[in-house]
Amino acid sequence: MTDIEIARNTRLNKITTVAKKLGINSSELELYGSYKAKISDGVYDRLKNKKNGKLVLVTAISPTPLGEGKTTMSIAIADGLRKIGKNSILALREPSLGPVFGIKGGATGGGRVQVAPMEDINLHFTGDIHAITAANNLLSAMIDNHICFGNSLGIDRVVWKRCVDLNDRQLRVVTTGLSKDKGVVPRDDVFDITVASEVMAILCLAKDMPDLKKRLGNITIGYTKDDKPIYARDLKAEGSMAVLLKDALKPNLVQTLEHTPAIIHGGPFANIAHGCNSVVATKLALKLGDYVITEAGFGADLGAEKFLDIKCRCAGLKPDAVVIVATIKALKYHGGIPKDEILNENMAGLEKGIDNLYKHISNIRDKFGLNVIVAINKYASDTKKEIKFLEEKLNEIGVELSLVTGYTDGGNGAKDIAKKLVKLVTKPSKLTYTYELDDSIKNKIKKVATKIYYAKDVEYSEKALEEIKKIEKLGFSDYPVCIAKTQYSLSDDPKNLLCDEDYNITVRDVQLKTGAGFIVALAGKIMTMPGLPKVPAAEKIDIDKDGNIVGIF
Image (tube, rainbow, N blue to C red; front, side, top):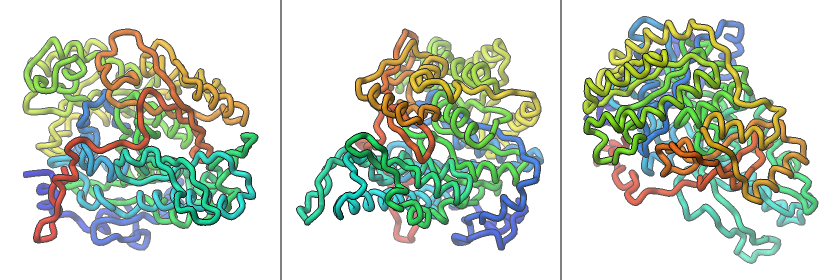
């Protein structure tokens, strides 16, 4: 059966039943049908003095173009913990419509380990991302409206971008205001995908509504002729934006196919944004469960680095253990084996590709100082010889390996890693950040590039250097850095899979995000508005005569 058929043929519990299992009262839910709900603000306040559960971060090696099953693994682990009698809960990101209709497809797990209702979650869900799109574009409308009616703030350069939650490369650079109406000033504009919007980052980092409003007001929308920043609060925009985000700020409660509670909230990409679900959702989950399984986007060089250096620093969090997800086929891919040969046993390619895994392990264990375990998302094509080789290599560096078959066996296929995690989270660890906030901007970028990406050095375009000087002059150099780069390589070149020669990271632009509270450095050719592939998933998605959605995977 396909993933969507497995999900559709599984009987779900009413969401009120799932909530009751967590100690959430029905009066503290806002229902979106029978199987989805928003959790009201008062739940965290009621539980704020309760001891936090153990936090487990799931990350991965550098992925192949189709990903390595990080969400599937997260769900399997949470279900596996329930199978051995532990009170586990998931805290995941929301899928974006862009990749659902693009190359990657859905992001709700797969096989026997999914969050449900999968069609709803993958599509419009509870409308959070739509609300972020609306709030973002409301600010754009208010900026151009202000300019139209006299521009009393003296806006000379607009840096705020419009957004849409679809992959549409045609919108990367556009010209707006061509109507020739009185007061309308034509200008070049840019669209980002919604998950790259600063509003998404703000929603995911805000601790409550007052903090959300403050961050929205702090957004830099443009500059005067003498480079004085102009903020959203100068347009009196933060109140109306917050109204649009009122419900979106509340975490969403759903369940896995095995009825494990799952909070799914917020969804910035890790290759173009900070890649973590909301602080609100993670902190709430820590009060509701004894074991919280959360996920950061893409590999440990991207999502995990930003989870630790940005989110954990901002929210005062620390993972008790980190799971690095890998597949044998991905290791061979990173060993230079062609795609059409990676399902064949190839020890030379595996031995070469394991270097990618070693580097991600080193990032987590040696650089950040955290407890780590490797989870192999097992495929039928994996041979006993390949598995034994991996076990021996990881034993040599003192790292445990667990084979997980959650895709085919559900939570039963993750009981081994669940048992190992229960022991691992009790071991002491101390989170060490990659850089200090009082480091210079260039030094922060260099530390991430050399320590986490294994680059030799960092090169900058003239534009990037100019923007860094402006940010330093404005007094925001103490912000953390959020580096946008390809997910397919530790370097900024998606074709450099082996990374076995010296390379530099090239920063071509730097953007100040005063609402989110970080500085974005764009490296290589990364785009904040992806495009569709030659054959997008949208061509296969349909609705049949009985009203059933088909084609989402």
